[in-house]
Image 1 (cartoon, rainbow, N blue to C red):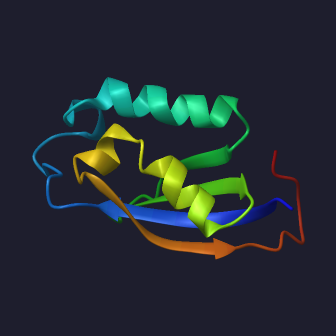
Image 2 (cartoon, rainbow, N blue to C red):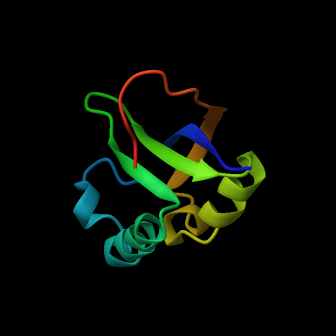
Image 3 (tube, helix red, strand yellow):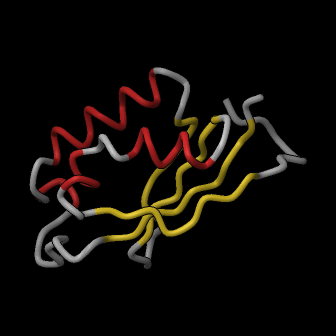
Length: 98
């Protein structure tokens, strides 16, 4: 049964702090990959957390292993630009997500 998960990813050692997000290596490949996950309904919402090195993503998935498996195909995961730091089931009590 699918659940909602809150996932944080942080910048890996290959992230170039001198460049914007859109200037990182293979930005277009990463953006296309994440947009496809969103179009599939796997990623509900996501984006960088201002003032941090982290990104927050909300997923609809069966378990954490499914999330890790699917994100392993992200070009930025393969290049160690982004890493999963936390994936936690989330019980939504207020509002609507996807």
